[in-house]
Length: 112
Image (tube, rainbow, N blue to C red):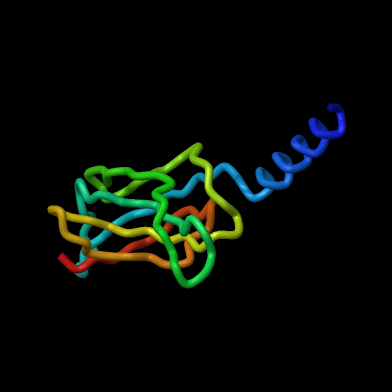
């Protein structure tokens, strides 16, 4: 019984090593450099690395009057591909690829 508990504990430890708290922030602007208010920003990662990427939303936030967004205290995978998508009026208007779990001052220019 103790052997089974030890193996289970080791498996849980190994599987949780890839998880890390995330804190990202940035600003969404239009092509003229003006802040975009009330845009939906999604922080996304693949559930599994590889060709068949099923999207998993880590966090979502709306931009403030000055176009800024903050997503804090969320958990993501260190080894999975991550990116940000921006939606405005229910239309995808921008994307930023290869975002890290703790990137700050991310600038995303969108086409409205």
